[in-house]
Length: 239
Image 1 (cartoon, rainbow, N blue to C red):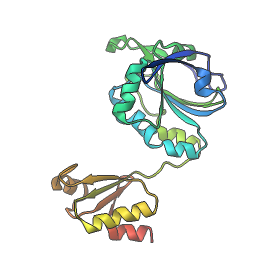
Image 2: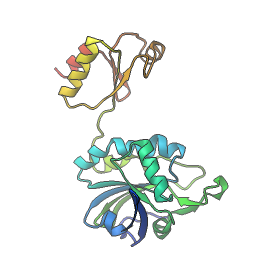
Image 3: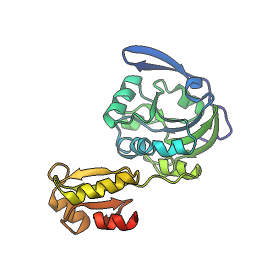
Image 4: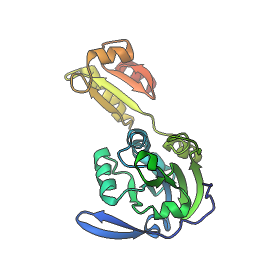
């Protein structure tokens, strides 16, 4: 396997399923006249692919758009039915799924690998690339070593190459009927900050909150892995 930067994407046809209809698409449909980020992974529903690789590109899709990227594409050597169902299960509709079911594009790029020892047959090596009008501008190819390395092809590495800072990851722990929780959420919304809300006895218990924060009061706000505190602490940040 080698870095394909500077090379043109080979022409390949793909059999895709849209609704109840078969639709034939080509590499031109995905790449011609567009600035595209593509990331390739070994298989739908597999651990790293499902827990990190696809979800993070999906979460940061807006940041890629701000960097001038027209589309973010996930490629795997899986058929279109599997890729469509996986997209639905992951709620990853911000990402375009490219089912390289026959492994034709993967093979032409030189990234088709034998994973028969896992019962996978032929699959793609893990990588990401920036493609401009069908030409590969930059590749991040995982090191050739045993296992399933995942150090180079993540969303953050590609965003860094594009000089785009990833959006902050914000989590808010709340309980129903808490006025201070409502105040914290309104403050985040006012500042256009996306967040995930975790509600007491629905998504977590007091024991979990104490394990994370050392406190049982709500709200508790975490930004990029750092505990901020409650509504008063948020006010200081956005004063």
